[in-house]
Amino acid sequence: MSEAHLFAAKSFPEIYESALVGPLFRPFAEVLLERVAPRPGDRVIDVACGTGIVARVARERLGADAHIVGVDLAPPMLAVARSVDPSIDWRQGDATALPVSADERFTVLTCHQGLQFMPDKPAAVREMRRVLDSGGRLAIATWCSLAQLPEMQAFNAVVERHLGPIVDSRHSFGEAEALGALLTEGGFRDVGVEQLTRDVQFADGALFARLNAMAAIGMSEKGKAMSEAARAELAGQVASESQEVIAKATKNGRFLLPLSTRVAVAHAP
Ligand SMILES: C[S@@+](CC[C@H](N)C(=O)[O-])C[C@H]1O[C@@H](n2cnc3c(N)ncnc32)[C@H](O)[C@@H]1O
Image (cartoon, rainbow, N blue to C red; front, side, top):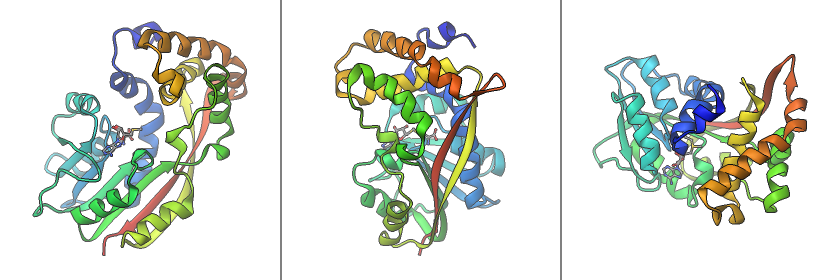
């Protein structure tokens, strides 16, 4: 897909779904689901579902009859999720007050790259416990800290040359100890945390640089004050200034970005 076509009149959730989910989020979502091994009869809830990749992979694994719910705070992300797979029960809501009634329970709960954005993480974990059956399986993934991801740091540094230091919330909860302690203190048992690393492959490194710049600009105070057109123009400029970083991550003509995430698993008591 050409860049001009990709960015023309598309919303952020549409670009996220068409450019990032396939190469980047889906491979990690598949591993996350493997960790909870969905089986027939499971009732699955995916918290912070975004455009819905984990729930959709669960549908592929479990078939048409499975009860699968996706919850997200952002209606525009859910609108894309609904348009891609209307068979899933997509619900708008906050992870700290899940839209799940007192008599509804799940056997599997996933949360892929969402927990790091939640200001009250213990409250989110309490809700996860409330909606899971006793013995229910949970898997949560949060990207590792930037200190462990030099390529991502280098891409962000190009944005920071324009906007000053950026607090990258995507990588703000990347320590295994903190993630494990959050679940243990939240009453979960059999808590384990692993690190998972994958080379993410993009057809075009400049496209990745531009998408990353869009996200990073949106997280900076100066970027938030800019108009949408100015942000888009800066993202394009950052992409063209990222050639050196792109070249370093390009092997045999393929842009390969190593990414690492924490994956926590646990059982509800
Ligand atoms: C990086 S996206 C990940 C989406 C999806 N899980 C995936 O793997 O593609 C993070 C998502 O977390 C959602 N989110 C952030 N805070 C939330 C909260 N408190 N409750 C529910 N969703 C939240 C955002 O709206 C966004 O869709």
